[in-house]
Image (cartoon, rainbow, N blue to C red; front, side, top):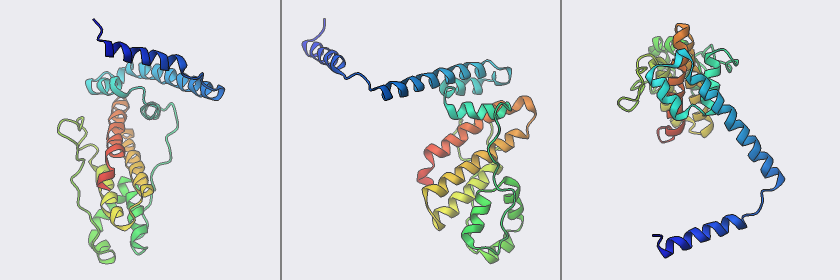
Amino acid sequence: MKRPWCLSLLTLATLLTACRPEPLPDDRAANDRAANDRAVNDRAATDYASRSELQDAQSQFILAQVGHDPRLIATLQEAYGEAPAPQAPNTQALPAPVGRLEFVKSLAWGNVQNFEAASFRRDFIDTLHPGLDWSTDGCSTPPGLDFGYHETFRPACLVHDFGYHNLRLLERTPENRTRTDEAFFSNLKAICAARFPPERPSCYVVAYMYEEGVRLGGAALF
């Protein structure tokens, strides 16, 4: 039996729905485009979930949860060579004698190889830019949520940590954080691209999850 107050709320909801104004033409067009985009993304998610390279348990789990996300679909298009990859991070670090901020950005927004080369020269770099924070905890993920890539992605995590630790002190801006996260994602995908072809798509899926983690939860750490 419906309680009277429940009936009143249902009646009010019905009236509000009935009295809601018709969407304007522009609104209808936007809604139609959004619906079409969702349908395209749903078809793409279904397609990728059926591919042989993505039948492992963790890829299936991730695709079931967020497979319709346009960012993940774009990532998989890169993994399969169906779309061009965006420009890679800087391929050459600036020389240490440049200004402190510029040098930090060149490492934080560069590739793994540049950062590793600079790490071998830390003693020299520290004489020019003393006090840089090289500390890291690697790929810090909650227990059980590293998807087995903790060590695989460690080189990219070292670069990302360096960027966060130093840029938050030198020039803490949303733009610098975004650029550092974008370089992180590019480095993750570069690691995946170097893997044996059948392993690449599942690696790209996990790279997307790592990048989403810092994009959505990294503000408090920057």
